[in-house]
Length: 633
Ligand SMILES: Cc1ncc(C[n+]2csc(CCOP(=O)(O)OP(=O)(O)O)c2C)c(N)n1
Ligand SMILES: CC(=O)[C@@H](O)[C@H](O)COP(=O)(O)O
Ligand SMILES: [Mg+2]
Image 1 (cartoon, rainbow, N blue to C red):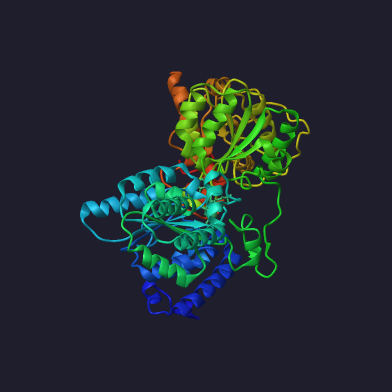
Image 2 (image 1 turned 60 degrees about the vertical axis):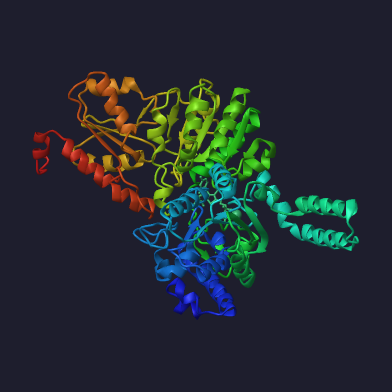
């Protein structure tokens, strides 16, 4: 196999074009095999094999910079830069990251995970290069989905103005995670059908050439017609108008053509945009036929294309999606808004049932948030379905357009807490900190899937301003579901176990962890009072005052950043009340970015397990109690 002898990009340079094409097929086979065991972003990577080979063949990474937008489609780049032997550890704890990562390789000159940052980074590197008088090439590889992200358009605006030498390679496979949406997508579709344009262009040009080359108005008219038609026919006119030299569309699986196009592009001064047409999932038919399903593939059987997913209780996501349909049936105000994640957010059935009330805005979280604000201002009940980590992209809109004017937007924040294999760029651990500090915000997290339904009822009925329910990327507990979920009084907590030794204020899935610890401690005569702190904001102040009255030691537990999180809120409360001497410990995510692995491994790493809670309880016991319990007090 040629791939056995490819350990660094320079190994490509001695291969013939035919060998490079053979290598492309070997890499596809490698990806399908490796990811059948590990899972991962299969379809995106199958679509970018030839393009990545062409870049590494012609240019000298890391001197020449390759910046992959989102970075989920950089597996081929990793294979070609000495990491093919690490694929058995892909997205596993302490293994290879599923995105580009500077600490992992000198060839990873940029990090990502969130979309639409590559053009800004590329421009930054190009400007630094020119200021330092250095000479290297900069390539940003951005997908058609990522191109719908606001940041990408901000960067295009700047790049086209500054006219720096850099190359944007638009990898257009017509897909975001789901089918791509929006006017940019429609424009690209028009170009993609370019064969009609190209044929017309050739015909028009040959026709015009037949007009006798005579002086005077006829020739000039002919030229004007040609120019105007060329203007109309030149497929990348929008990019040209923005100051880019547009080249394309080019077949992204034709390696000789890609090599030639890249070489030709070197002769062009200023920013170049090469529009490459690819097929997401190329070379593996299940992924080609449904690249949405195979975007984030879980382990699968290669022959059948069947996922090996363990069947468990429904994911919170599924409960959210089904419950929203129930509510929308009876309430026409309800609309769902998603920034390009209809599948991941559990909204596919909602979209089928209410196509006109399911709004996919593309990768545009900022726009999505203020769109919701606009709809709420007109009396609708927009439900902004967004992953915790991607909500970070719309923070000012949440503050400025929703909280300040107290508009009735409901946030359905999925992937709240650890997310597992996607790792540090995707952990949903900051929304508690950044939302609880906002005036007028209500923030809830359910202990199980039935309480999620009740919180959704609470959110839909709430008309005093913004309200958010956050839930994790985990299965529910399999609890019975209320047929007709009742709203929960805002700001009320729930005591799950009576206990007089110590209170644990647990957020969301941490309630399960606390109950497990309570069971174990009961055998030691230690009775925990486990309290479901289901409203992070506003907190149940009556209950907090009661705990103070009982001089009850308190441990708070949240799968969220300790810095400014729920535990901080409890500490602040007692400080503000001037209540001295409270013994409070907080348990949460420490002040560093937690890398990829399983959710279980991530909780173990940061100490969010029953065992860690038991240790905390022991250290918080009064000394004499510790001694009597035989603890080394
Ligand atoms: C800010 C942000 N929002 C949403 C996502 C989730 N996401 C990851 S990849 C992707 C689609 C990217 O489509 P495209 O750029 O066309 O890449 P392709 O997978 O088609 O190669 C989305 C929406 C993200 N990573 N970042
Ligand atoms: C690359 C990216 O951002 C998305 O594909 C993300 O990985 C989806 O996450 P889920 O698998 O949790 O839907
Ligand atoms: Mg795409």
